[in-house]
Image (tube, rainbow, N blue to C red; front, top):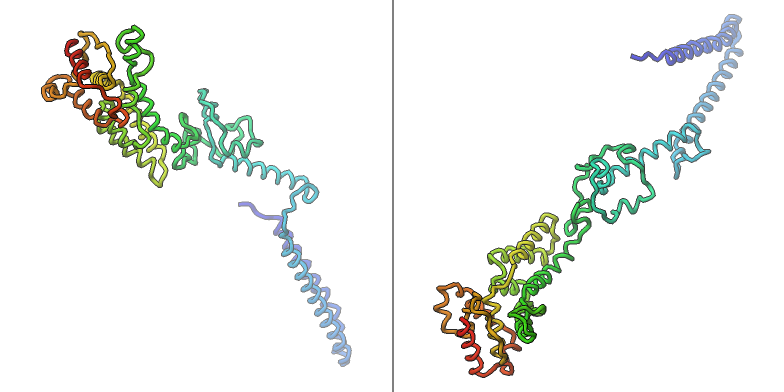
Length: 386
């Protein structure tokens, strides 16, 4: 226990001196009053008593005015500014204030949510992908330290910062390793176009161009416009109808995958609430599975499209070799669909029938139809090849 010797000495000395002063002040008037009473003179005690009373009143008034002045000065100390600038306070006080302000700046910087990947890179030595600076880096770019880990006031673990994972619906986290500062709506709006581009890229070569140039069947570097027209999404077709169309063509297997993706896409596209990063990643996983299952178009469906439309337009196309497994398909012989359901060409025939019903009116117009004898000739060519 620390004993305040100086305080005890100061209080005791002050009390003793105060008592001695009171005694000395009381001795003189006391002696005068005693002599007057002893000599039976009453005028002098009255005068002496009156003088002392007036003196006491003046002393009380001065003491009260002093207390009032001190309290008024103390109450006027809070001003519109704090006097901390050089010249307003002492050098030692100014130095202490500057150190406290610098520490407050460090605390404010360390407590601000920021991208801690550079600090994590400094700890692990692993180089992380570059990204654009966040708001904290742009705002406080002039306040930088050579080593955050050495000068920090609040210890921050880069792998688990105290502010947690900063993210907002519709945006990825600025500290994300693979998707920093990504707006989900821009990606979601492009998903139908990417699916259509993937489907169109599966179109085989143009057989007409290959046969005209003397090449083999389907060796043309240009995609077949007839198959591309079937695989494209029309301007009036929504994504639900387009996925159903691709399922009929056998490009999306199993069909339940398209239904799952469609439900997630419609929620992300038309919901009033933005997606979280977890929901966005789940949607992109389904989108990746959709693209992965779209490997190629069924050759039976491609052959049916090419020969059907070529026969309707009156074109003479050399059929493929007899050794080809698609040479046995008879796309123009409608009565053979019932018997072909038992062999390997059943699925392609059923899909071809659905597809020809959904053709555009331009392709089914009477101007592009050929006589029945040309259709029979094309059918006989396929039969001969088989």
